[in-house]
Amino acid sequence: HCTTVGGGPRWLRIDMQVAVKVDRVEVFNRKDNTGSYFTRMNNARVTLSDGTYQCGPRFDTDNPDDVMSGAPYVAGQQKFVRSCSGREAQVVEVRDSAQQLNVAEVFVYARGAPPTTTSTNSSSSTNTSA
Image (cartoon, rainbow, N blue to C red; front, top):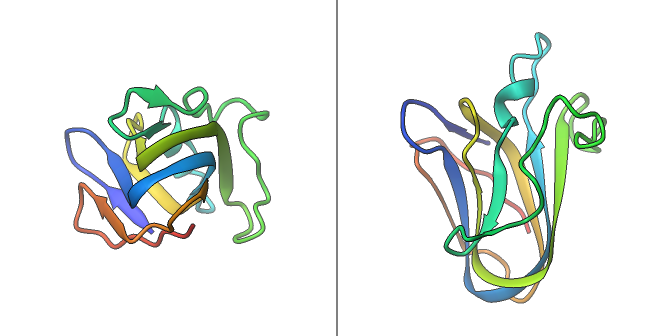
């Protein structure tokens, strides 16, 4: 679970330690009963390495085709999937959410080494799987 608050950029970074070919990234958003978490991923994006390559469009929580609800992990949790087309990168980031960034899980599907280091711009803990 990752939460970023306060001003400035909001991001979650996964350092793969070596360059890998990233096929896709799945990002699971938190959601509570009031739905206040629903829009927190709106406008966020997945970028690779130095942020110059963006995997697909920004997240659009208002577009039902973009949000895969009923994710297999937590009922009501949102899932966003972005294809990175096998692009080579060492760093995967989820960044630039319009509001506070809340991420429940991130799965990186890549050919190469698994992630060993994860950092955020907050002091909250992060649970990341590959």
